[in-house]
Length: 307
Image 1 (cartoon, rainbow, N blue to C red):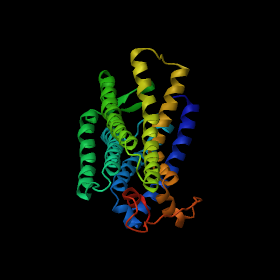
Image 2 (image 1 turned 135 degrees about the vertical axis):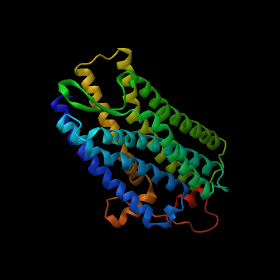
Image 3 (image 1 turned 60 degrees about the horizontal axis):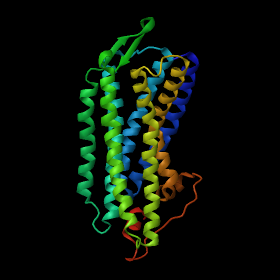
Image 4 (image 1 turned 90 degrees about the vertical axis):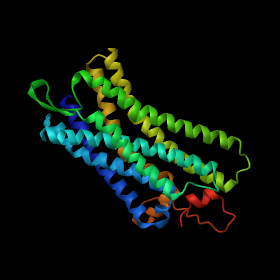
């Protein structure tokens, strides 16, 4: 990567870390302070996604050191740890998003029998166990290697297996999660089209919560799909190395490392419940606090209202 790209990348990555760490601390603070968030099925899974993204952010300073020095100075053992944690955090974030889509569809389609808290906790455990299981074989061969000008690199494995690993990551970290999410939102869309009698209040909260999760899903796709497309184009020989490749690689790398700080920003900007909870921080968000008033409140409103 040319020095201009390296300098710009370090500046952007530093800003991403600062913004992302603050946003995640804000989300964690809200979750620990308010009991209503800790009892909410969706919030538990959203915080699971936030933990995965926060883990990814904590790895960025090491990447900044590598880019500044143009070499991997941390040794082979930490290279394995770094590559594992990086892939593990991406998998946990993607599978948490899948769990959110499943829970969201369940809550809307079965408002009078939402998933039990034990089931939500089981899904949470499954997310992290599955992430561990799919990451270990993909990063077990991570090691250091020698690049051009005898610089040390931290790579995911042997070069001859590079594109097999990329294909496996595309299927496990992107394609499968997106198919699960698309299936659940297709079911949800069909249900809503067949349920015109849903109350105005309930439909308003359903729409707001769905928009937030759709934004999170869209940002996941926008930040990761270009990288996979670029890698496959390079493998097929349709994108030769050069200035164009450098620019595309730089843009895709920025998108990859920008993703972990997107979700908490989406929560705070789009979800009124989170905006209300951040009022004590003096953040410039207009508060419209909503409280359930009686038993006639719609089930979806009860789930997504501040208490």
